Length: 502
Image (tube, rainbow, N blue to C red; front, side, top):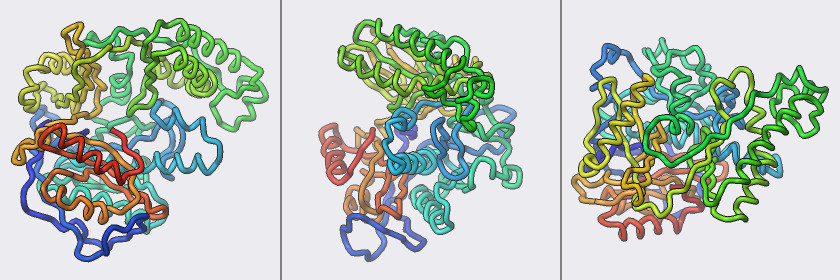
């Protein structure tokens, strides 16, 4: 969750979220449309804009724009957002896409992925950006649907007080961004996009990519589970230098099973080496891809049956696709190694740690968790400084009872936080964030949970309704007085949602 700890104060003032005409095609009608529902105005204690301003460096006068979109390495997301071929990622879509059994299923996955990575998650991250430019890409093709997407994003951020609202800028894609004309000096990208090459980036793209790898964590010296890297030997040659099958592939890098040349031989050798090592790993263990996130590309293996299923999945589809993408142009990035690590047994704590790394290393208030995690924050901050990084940072932490240390694993440069956002005026001591899919419009959802929303217990931090299906994709933060109340409120949301992801 991209909100700094203990940042939310709920005020009684309300804003009319719906200044434009509403276009709904909801699957579920809750109440007749009357007066537009209101939401309370939200004040954040801290925004990224404020933290960048505290940097104190000579570069702080540069106008920085945030770009939170994600391209992936598997399929196009939007008409103008091409998949990466240099900076490879292994998200949930990369893992599931090979299992498509029809063109219709592929298109459904593609639409779901585009909404998630070009609209839902960028809106969520924009919510705490503060008064600074944020760039969003169009998901849709027609002018009417593009206007609808813009309207959805504006409805989300308008609940923030005026001084903390991000300045949303909408473009067709990475190659359609007139930065200078819009007063933008530098871009801060959450994830690497190949199409940003040549643009002024605040952080070197190779550095950003490296810091997000599991290999970087293994070599960082930070407290983390014991792990080994399963690295590739070399890379596949260009398709044009292989067999007739590869030469006729029309630009497709994936090495086909009927390849009779050196590419197929190299792939067979690499997959065999990797699978042999995985098969001999003692149970239980955790397998992660180099650039996995969001629950994709991580496998917890505790039984022979799970190991057998993993072997079938990896050897049959995932590894051939992954290894085929490694070329002479990106081999130096080491995008494809797998990470085998021990599994933390019976962790005593599971934490989301959020802080900001400035060029001077300063941290936001972390209240009672600050003392507990400050040493780890300092270690992570020093490590990131050593690679020239500054900006938002997050860490997923599993606390081990055996070591007494924080067996933390910084998912560097991802913003994670789950609790404490609502403590302020409302004394809501527990909070959780999650994404959901629901068969109703934003209007209808607000009416169903009107009391909770008016009380500041539910905050919509991103929303996108697909007008064709009437299905909405949303991200919420839910706050409650204690754990039991929080579980009850989340269960209520679950009861009307078709899918929920934490």
